[in-house]
Image (cartoon, rainbow, N blue to C red):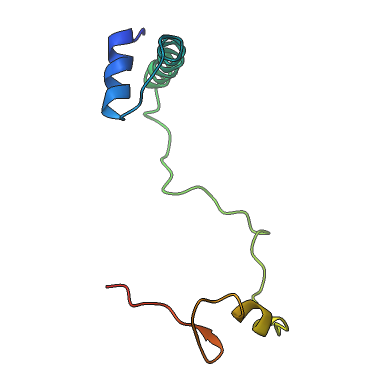
Length: 94
């Protein structure tokens, strides 16, 4: 499935991008390739396949959270524009 250079320019204008002629030609080719892959995917019969709600999370990524002392608190707070006690002081966000 091809995509015209006019469509590429229209999408670029909608995204507020300024493209050179070479960039427009490059994106025309790349978008055409993406659309061809989408056409291939839509032709696959997936009627008998079970759907998934979410990708599985690997079991070994998470670890137990254990509090540890932080010795450089004063050095860190020295960089704060404002502080209140041992905390950063920030403006309200409403």
